[in-house]
Length: 126
Image (cartoon, rainbow, N blue to C red; front, side, top):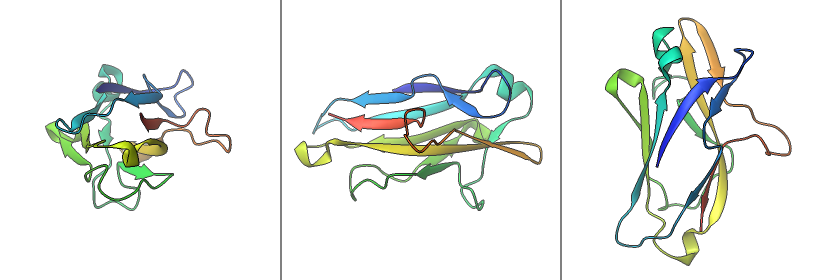
């Protein structure tokens, strides 16, 4: 699953092009979920935060059970973020909200998290 990360129209928050990712169960083939910064963010010098930053590039809002997802990692000079969704069986079904962090220079941006979580990006395993 490939997703694109961009700034909202006001340049305040990050948005993910497919806010609610639906993943199908596949016990034999874990799937990559890949977030790529769009051309505008790249042109402005945007990079996913480092894995060692206080605000890591990927943070679970709703923590999934162990063994469903691997640890996220960065590629292509921090313009691509990836993790694997194993989704092996019925015990991996559920939905988990997450937050992304990207920096342009000293300014940090993140995906919007609302109380209702209607606008929070989410991975949903079926």
